[in-house]
Length: 625
Image (cartoon, rainbow, N blue to C red; front, side, top):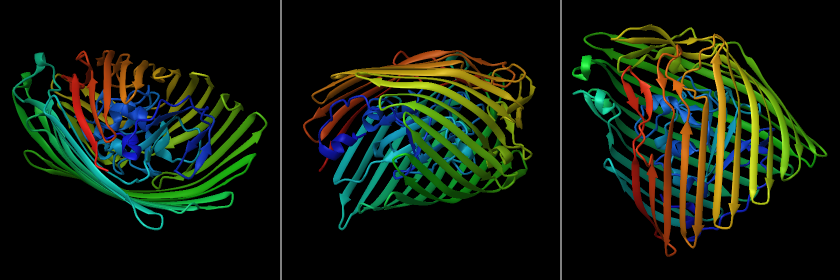
């Protein structure tokens, strides 16, 4: 990957000083909402210091961020790539909204995210907000929001290559240029392939096992117009990927394309922002049954899932010295269908459409050192009664510190995937449920943020009460087959605390973060796929075009299933990056993940399944002009 600082100037910038406490959540590049919540900011330089081909592996340094079954998008089935924050992730559906320049990128059918679609080199910064402290975002934001923001196109052309173990190769290239009268344009292309690795331990491996791998191609085109008080941004991108899922007969492929338009206009103290988007995708997969000793495999079904979505949003904001108001409306229509050919004979299909509407408003008021916020959203999910999502918060403090308290209510409608699509992982089958009800969350959190000199510290305590939680409920367990079905499991509670600290002195920095989340059903069992504790540590040094970073990511034990029968042990893995600038236009870099090749159990089928082993890559990036 070519670093954005070299793209823009050919120079590596110095380490920045600690920033003031963040008091807003950026909705789009032009619209922000005041929030009594902690927001994690990751700029381009921080993203470059983290290893990982895709953004999800880099975001794992934010405690609480996980994909389903501890897996990486490098080899995981796309349907497990939904995001969990703060222990809200008992299934592959994402309870976190991911937006790219204000436009949702979650799949319209399943809510998961195609991480291979998102090129880290195009991202200027990322904001991670846990919970639902504002009423601006819709039902997919019950667990939080991850906002990605693209760099502005600049006059540049680049090419980069990375190679690594397991036959990994990545090439990225692009060109950007300024046109006349405020217009600019850019095009980029990223391609990657790896031979992959076995996801079944050697002692359990059989004749049917093969490496899990991926190859993908992701082009993108951006056009921007900037004339001070008026801005327009158009982006279109596509993805074509193929994967082998760990056995000879199981594989999947994805093709998708999207177009997004964002228009913003300033008028005095007011701003208008309009967004339109359309996305189409098709996911194709095969499923199999594995025999005793993993010596034989039988194809059970072949699945095709086409889906599309069209949406839009209109936002208006007015800001003054003592108050601010944000109001808007959004709507999205999604359609999808699961078409399945069964073997030795048969056909099964299911699907439908969802049309959701939202009306929202968010207020803020400053009274001396106090900032009051309040919001309300009316969400109409179409197939269920409309529901209300209120929020209210209070912060007290100044530029370098604040205390905060916020309470909110959020809901999530079941996805088309949960309603209509059945799937299989080895000898574990999960059935759909068209009778699912929306799940709800009532949350409260309080905390303290401070930035002083070279230090930054944030502490938060939270309590979330879940109703009608949608999870994979175990119906039966035999040595030959585990049968589960998506269902509303009833009430659950997630309570805990998180803390993060950072220090920077000259060319050296260090930061650490920790999350404790006690996530349990009302019956006492732990919510699956939610560790009790997670933590990260990162330290680095930069001087004269050379940077070195090293980090640790650790997670406690978690359960695979709702009955807490299958325990996934805790783990700790080390990682690191090294970068060296060569003149003004080139850079060489290396990245290492899971440095000591720690074996991490990611799931059971019921055979243990492994997460990524040791991965390394080296690369060269060159700025042509």
